[in-house]
Length: 211
Image (tube, rainbow, N blue to C red; front, top):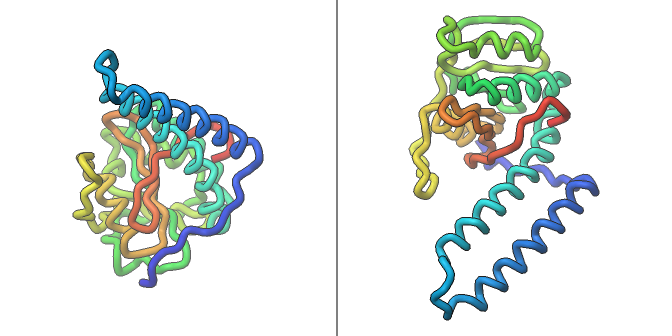
């Protein structure tokens, strides 16, 4: 497979405005931190942690906007995915959702249980209900259909810095390393949401509104 490229995308003006404001605040915090480095009355480590948290929030805001662009050309029902992921996140129901794009996935996925139903948020949520017969493994979405559930994905050995990745996240990364698919993950432990694309993991903010 050729290296996956990220489409060029112009952020909405409202998102750009928010990012500029937040980036301005980060710049001022960094300037303040620089001026305090020689002083002993501040916790420099705490300052770094606050800046890091702010940057992660900016990344999530940007990724949320990009996600619609990545999904919309390949499924008209991307809003159903957004609603389902938001609800699953609120309930901390772990989930793994593969959206097939251009690359065929038959040789990369160990097929699970055939579904062959229209993609809806309620069906996605029911599949990932804890203890249900289909909640383990990944759902495969192709165009506007849920093709199958309980699929097994290749697992990545990528190390994400000091972050310890769970099985779902490693599986999402693994498939995104070998295809142009987009794989959404809901963490069962924290309810946080992220997506893997091009061998990288991006946190995003799930909501009932547009992705």
